[in-house]
Image 1 (spheres, rainbow, N blue to C red):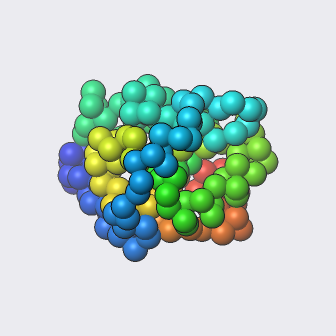
Image 2: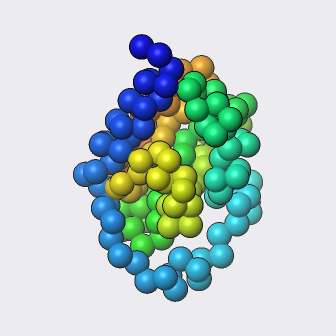
Length: 164
């Protein structure tokens, strides 16, 4: 199977698996603009809010290399595709913050607001949120959908990202 088909299959799987979580719920446009999220962590070991530009530089430049996944990070990562209005997204946010601190120096936790980064959400076929992309260093990323418990998140970090 060639690289383009693998990437296409990955995008389709990601899109399909996210359908059972938050789906296209309307939001008040004032809600997202009031949060003032920054693209860098404001405190040590906190999840890092990133834009498409950041994603292309820090995670994967799929525009320059669309046929093969090439992770650009220096440690495994989790990407949380979320929206401020999404209840399940708000439910897992504290767990992701705690795990970012607990695994500081071992993993990076990124957050992508799908309402602000619509191109990136579209490019990764995000149709339901929360959607979590687990990115190990040398293997293909794995998508998980829905509000996972802290224990499930930790289990995925250990088994997918840290291979313990």
